Image (cartoon, rainbow, N blue to C red; front, side, top):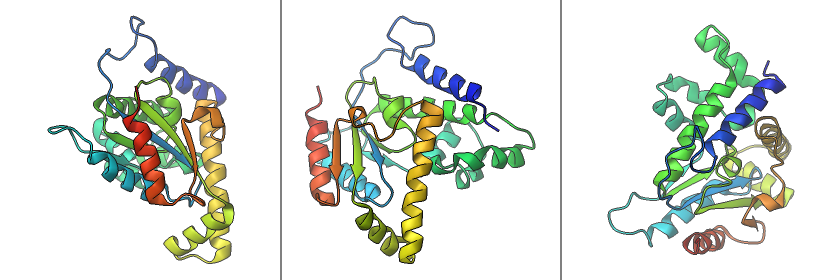
Length: 234
């Protein structure tokens, strides 16, 4: 079981990665390129918005720079690659399944490595991606991890529950009841993840530059709103 002490240790590690220049344990000071974090309610179209956003921003990318890239579920693949961990772990490591992670890791390694180690490694990878720039990271506590990084825009996507349920029902081919349960379960799990490992409230509006209701704003318009805000970051 992950203890509160372990969670506090993980949060302490993240804070050391965000220290001001000149402090022990800091990352090397260097120019930080633009990046975007997207927090979302389940079923509000975050992946679709992120994909359109990447295309919109790519139009303004300078020649020779790396293309805008979206990291969502595939983010954990990058973490495993960076830290030379078994790639089959990607199937079981999800931000919305933290209550299951420790047992799965124990089965894989035949020991109980602290889950905080995985989160620390994810933090390191995320900060490197942000430093390289031109990345859009969905979830994984990214708005907390990169809260103090310059030129990073933090976005929260929301939508009415009935619209999210309908989106999930169609996208995952579920029944209405199944889609409704899916949305509520995912939202609650992400809230727990935020609170447990970052001591933060995912629903705090002050955490974000923009909060967009995709029930009222279409995906294309949402991408343009976010993209224009990114381009105007100082």
